[in-house]
Length: 261
Ligand SMILES: C[S@@+](CC[C@H](N)C(=O)[O-])C[C@H]1O[C@@H](n2cnc3c(N)ncnc32)[C@H](O)[C@@H]1O
Image (cartoon, rainbow, N blue to C red; front, side, top):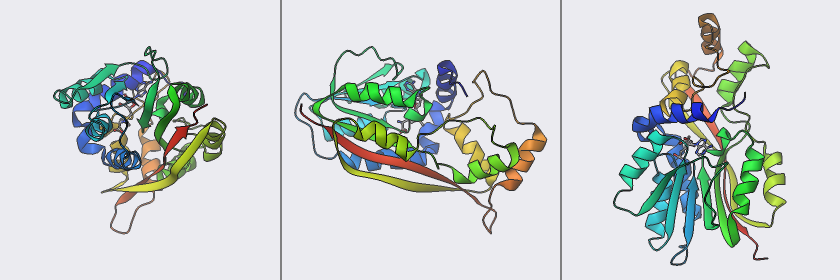
């Protein structure tokens, strides 16, 4: 599916007010990423969080590095509004912008992004551009959804809708490996983790995407599933003995340091 940025912004803006209440896994990923970044940066260091959402990670990084200049950037006005409200007293600068076409001319000591790159039309090109913005000796911190994410949903969708089912194309570990190790990086604590969220039933698992704004309703190629298809999809979704349903996130989390060349 071609990604329409206005559609992405509209979906996340709509969900922004309730995002923090529902984005439990995203909060856990940001926390794990922040834990890997613990060593404070020098006074005056520059940090940017791309696709910052409601600003949790940017705020956490500012708290860890009070002397740093921290910028958060997000495409969705609604998300940026909440992030600005949360950061009103903390001197974190929140910008509305596209992380694939940013107008910031500077380079940064730390570029981070958590659970956001999957919305790039060209994730490899976008990641390459982010890497270029890291100063020599600086760091890149990533939390990325990778292929194999949401196996319960993917399997049910493949069974019912066949191979033509549209959706985000998540990078494979091999593709990421080429992208990340071909540049001059020293990776620390790079890991792939699986985090599982439990819901009362499969419908609630599917609704969780919409609740955090990760929906396709605003995409030009989106066609709603006919009710019979949706029923078969829900019937094919694996259910636990008590009727509950899991949604398993597969995420690469890590921090790399760019060589001082
Ligand atoms: C799942 S949320 C993650 C937000 C936050 N990083 C977190 O971990 O909670 C994905 C975010 O990426 C933003 N996003 C998607 N495409 C973007 C783009 N091209 N430029 C900037 N932000 C983008 C969305 O607006 C949304 O806020």
